[in-house]
Image 1 (spheres, rainbow, N blue to C red):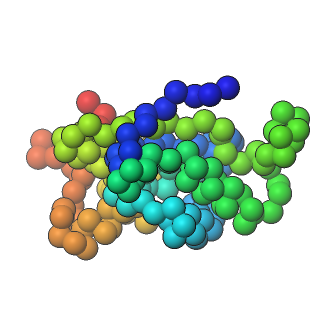
Image 2: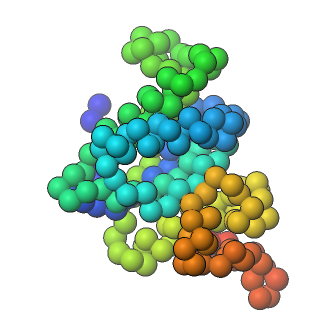
Length: 177
């Protein structure tokens, strides 16, 4: 089956990629393996990583592809395969996957959204950085280790208190309105 996907060469995309077992903590336990798989793919198939958060069972990322290139499916395929090869085979594998010689680590599909403009980009970056709070892993975005938020803070783009408690004492809820 051929999925209909956005196909803007040189485009900027938001992704959500999930593990098959949604109760797993595999991504944070093996975050260095994931990071290495991403670096290896970026070396051969470049893209700019604008924002990313790795949670126990899913991740969100924003990529900007090079001019004339729209092949993010290849990149995700290589990242998923590269990460999977680094792990012991402990997951449950259904017959449909074993028939295709697939591991049972990742969901086959993922969500992508083509970023339309600067406001859309900002909304999605905020969503990514606030996601660990949304899922209850931390109280403040800065407390989640596996996020590009730390790079934004180091560059002075945003403050360490970003995404904390609002003036009225309510959670800001970035991207959740």
